[in-house]
Image (cartoon, rainbow, N blue to C red; front, side, top):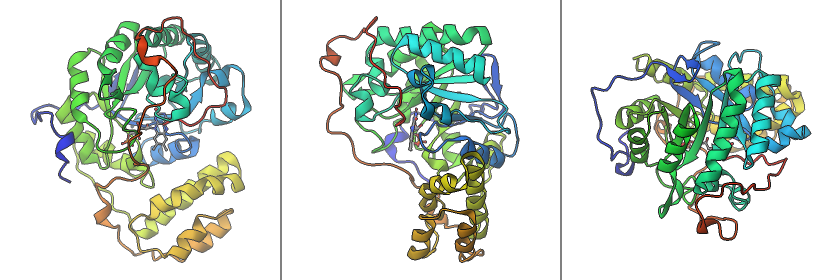
Length: 398
Ligand SMILES: Cc1cc2nc3c(=O)[nH]c(=O)nc-3n(C[C@H](O)[C@H](O)[C@H](O)COP(=O)(O)O)c2cc1C
């Protein structure tokens, strides 16, 4: 797919060799591809499914758990603990932490390393959800450079005795007039962060418009630590192009794999130098849907697993001819048997709708009118010692 000009502004360097691995401190990942943390999506079942598709139990990419709140973990909030589940196939446990208070973040990091055997920690500084940014969390936090440094340092110090690398994930800034990514990169480097992932949008943009890959290239030029590029990778070829254009050490892939876990197979092939575009028939897609629901059922019990699966139905069937009634029934499914009966009605020979390739999926929406921030947030850019209140049960991610 030809990229929209707005995201292809950086000058391609065709001679640049593709990275084959991703080095995060003591951890080497065989393919420089990370499954983006996505709240409500990247649970143990989905991570396992993606891992299976990548074709290797270990090493082919890094698969990050849904966002966990530091305070929720420290206070052993039951909802938080339920999200901290890993599949037996996950040999490299990776978790994203949300936090605004260095003390809670450090305690949570230590719990994850000591009790959960986590081998990679990511910190969320990109969430655009108003109820988070209104309290100074997620994508709002990097505006407070001093506080950001305190949180990063606290996490790195807590994880260091376990040899666990800590990365951070952020956006360009609050809006185009309040950019934070270059400062965040510098602070990350100074505090011992192993890599920084940049989603090339501002909080104000949320998921609208195009990700600005030029900002990723700018961050690469600005720091010495690995930069992971994120935003609008819909196909493996997009990932290759992003790395070639920006010099990123690897990619973080979110919405592109919704209803398409086989994208990780194409990505692994692409970074190994092969061009593969998996085009499953509807029969193969329905097998994948069944496997996804089965894994969810194994981890959560059949009824809850099937309920959780419902949100994935439209992504799997996007572009296929499957009728509205059948889609509707699948989106109400509550047992694997019922699902089997409905999937049997699909035409297994229907070819993959190639018109879907390279097109956006998942949330897109419109820009926010105004970024919700605490009163007076913009007045000071340091915030050191300003320990913000964290909610124990925050799970919105984003
Ligand atoms: C449903 C959903 C949930 C998300 N949850 C999180 C999250 O918990 N933490 C985070 O850092 N980003 C979260 N994100 C953002 C993604 O990780 C990623 O940065 C974003 O979708 C842009 O990448 P993409 O264009 O590949 O989707 C979420 C995105 C979606 C669509």
